[in-house]
Length: 344
Image 1 (cartoon, rainbow, N blue to C red):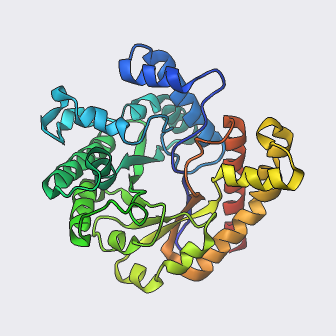
Image 2 (tube, helix red, strand yellow; image 1 turned 60 degrees about the vertical axis):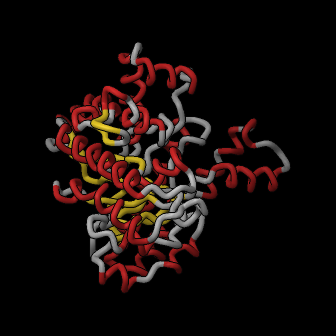
C-alpha cells in the first residue's frame, strides 16, 4: 500500500503578542526581518514538533497579495504579470532554514516540506474578476511556475516534497469564464517545472466538483479533497479516473472549520466558547480526536486504496484561537494517522 504522508495546508494562528497589523507592516517594509523571521521559523518548528511529516511554511500573508506584490513590482517583472526569475522568491522559505537545519542535524537527513503557491486562476480572478484574457492567465501561470522552480532550486537544509497550487475558486466561483481546456493549459504551465524537478504537485481545492480538470492536467499528480467536514465529497471522486490519469488524493481527515465546530459547542452548552477556552478544548478532546481521524482515513482508503497518498487537516488553521490548540489538533492528526498505519 502507498505510504500515507501527513502534511498540512499552511496558515496558522499568530503567536501571542503578534498582531496582523505588525505582520503586514513587517512584510511590506522588511524593516524588522530579524523578528519577522523568528516568528515564521518558531511557528514552523511548532509544526515539526506536532508531528507533521511534510509541513508547509507558515502562511501569514494574504494568499493573493503575497505573490501579486512581487509580480506587479515594476522592478521585478519583464512585462505585466511576467515575473523575473530572480524575483520569484518566497521569503518564508529563507526564514524557515534554521528549523530545517536543526531537523537535518538531529535526524541526519533533510526535511521534506510543502510549498503552497496561489494558482494562476486565483491570481487572475483577484486582478480581473469575470473577464477573459487568456494571454494574461497564461502569463500568470508562467510566473507561478517560476516561484515553484525557484523554491525547489534555492532550498538548502530542506527539500521541496510537494508544491501545492492553491485554486479554491475552481468549482465555487461563478465568475470563472475560461474553458476547461484553457484552465488545464494554465495549470499545466504553472506546475511543469515542479514535476520535472521531482516534486509532487498537488492542487488545493475547496470543492471537488471539477477535480477532473486537475486529474487531466499532466503535471498535477495529487488532488486535495476537504473530506473531513464534507465526507460526501469523496463520493464525487471516480477511482477509475484517478487510476487512468495516475492521480492520487490528499484527503482531509481533520476538520478545520473552527467556527462551525465552535457553534456545535455553543448550542450544546448555550455559551460562547470563544470566551471559555476550557469548553473550546472539547474540539480537541471530544470531537476531532485521533480515533475520529483514524476512522476518516480508513473510510478514504477503503474507497480509494493506493490512490490515497497524503492526509492532514482539511484547510489551514489561521482562524484557530491559539498556536497551542492548533498544535494539539496537528498532534491528534499525527496520532490518528499512526494508529491507521499500525492497524494495516
